[in-house]
Length: 152
Image (cartoon, rainbow, N blue to C red; front, side):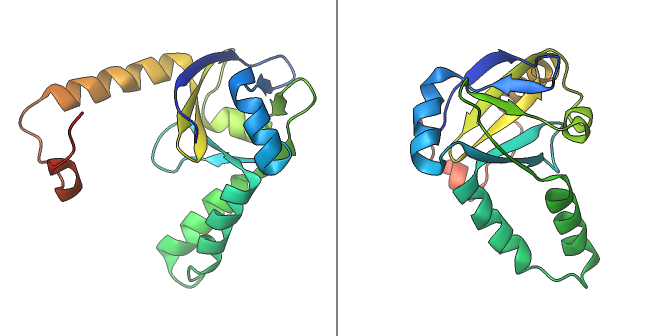
């Protein structure tokens, strides 16, 4: 399980260094094999260990290529998907199209999200967090059924 927000840097070659605290788990679970694709709802990237990504691919394969909405999701997620391996220094190369999609600059946030990571431009991440906190503090939004019993 991945959790926490980590400030990392994008190097000149387009590589990000996975924080040390996640590396051994990634080596044990997937031999450092990762897949990165776009998030279709947010301006960030999604980075999956290969076994987790394979579950997503299976779900995508069950969608209809005749349904325009389902086909669009397949096209975006699979079209941007890039498989790679973490090198011995824990670095992972992000393709230029992925970096451009998320508008990644030098400063990046790697955010654990259970079975995957999100990769955000650091400035965009701060804006999103501010918006999320502001929205949560407003009392006029409607709680979903799952959130009604959620307490910290």
